[in-house]
Amino acid sequence: MATFSWINKQGVRSSDGFEVQFTGRFTAEYREGARHLAIEVEGADGLINFSPRAFERWANDSTVNTQEEQARLLKNFLSALEFQGLRGMP
Image 1 (cartoon, rainbow, N blue to C red):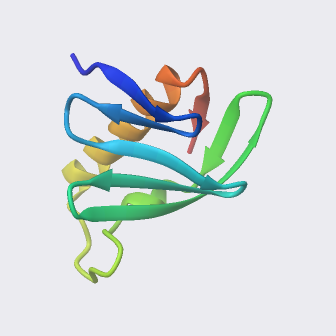
Image 2: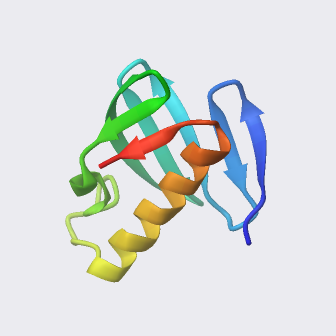
């Protein structure tokens, strides 16, 4: 099971090798090494809304991720939100 640590007030790092960082009021970034995804978000009262399509492809890569990869990325993102005391709603 992954453990998390805070990078700063807006981001967390997982022992599984990924990070989730809120980069603006309506944006978050999911990172694994040199790869990253930009995710448009909206939030209120601890609920973060986003499009599950955000996990279709890595930034600057036109190759569509497999369904399994998208599911893995979504699961990781949701677990990072949960650690931060937030709930995700795709």
